[in-house]
Amino acid sequence: MRHKKATPNRSLRVNDQIQRDVAELIRDLKDPRISNMITITNVEVTPDYAHAKVFFSLLVGDPVACEEGLNEAAGFIRNGLFKRLQIHTVPTLHFHFDRTTERAAELNALINQAVANKAKDDEGEGTAS
Image (cartoon, rainbow, N blue to C red; front, top):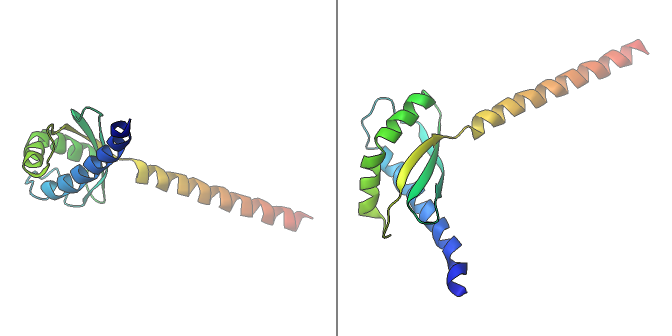
């Protein structure tokens, strides 16, 4: 029973290590599609360590082109992980653009718009009375 309890912590450590190592390895890529303003936001490794979803965000650049470039370079990056990680199976990497910050900005704009509309409504009611 003790072994099963330790496994989630191990997978979290592996996720964190892959996140750090992938971020470093991406700096060495020469592909013009891959922006140097990239951040690895999260890594989700399957329980059998066969696959890893690597989520990234961009400050500047085309997310679609960057995702294509990263997925084409996934084998090269995985090869770099083989040299760094101390695990039996190094996962196949699958890169995905993380839309969290994009969605947060959209929601923030909607909230600001709703607050502004509410202020206008309150203002209009105050002058009509």
